[in-house]
Image 1 (cartoon, rainbow, N blue to C red):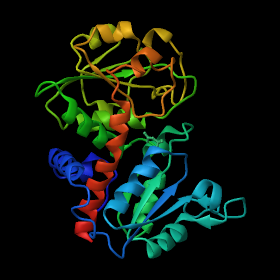
Image 2: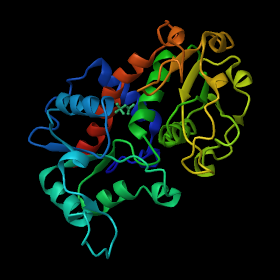
Image 3: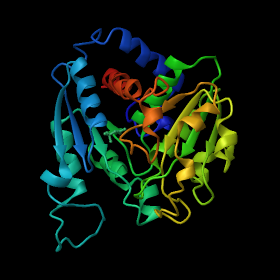
Length: 315
Ligand code: CP
């Protein structure tokens, strides 16, 4: 693997999950793999888990890390080719990415969807420009439309906690006051396609994900029916894809409550975090033994370490 921008970059997703679980058992087995090498983590948006877990994973491999909140600390970047740069953007991505590639052997980039122009967001412009100009491997720390380190983590977590070989996983939309990208849901769906699990996407009308991700996966507008016999309930909000970036409604009947969890096969509750309590999910679920959101977040380290290990072996 040279780059990690999505599941398409992974030759064998199941093998990568197994590798992450192996690393979890023995985190320092390759403590010198990254010696004398540096990873740069470039954030256009806020983060807790992605930043800290990727930094910790790098540390476990002896890899130095530089972190930059480029939206707050860097020059305004221009991404358009041929732009006449007489406005507020001081540097072009062509130079900025190329220079960062001189300082780092691997670069991770986080750039959320702006939710204004679907075509621009779905082109993953920021990450693809880094890939084009940095000259070093690029890891997605969440792009406009994908969050592959999260999805890898999610499958690692399901593998750890599944009560049967082919568990039932429900990805359900849940309400949220702000317009959020579709990245986590898109990405989870993309990775679920590589499994032999039983799985279903539940969302209200108007919140269908892009066909390029759904690819005919089972989908329903009936959350309660979807939850029947579920082993995992993965709640996530996303804004509308078709009415791009809009919050069509915040239907509270889609909040995950103890009554909803009663419909399941004693399911575990998952969420990528951060989560809005009593909007996405009731306190009584999040604070119960059914919730594995902290264990899930802890697995972010092993996902990042597995990916860094694969890339370092290729350098
Ligand atoms: N789940 C996740 O990516 O968390 P952060 O936004 O805090 O990194």
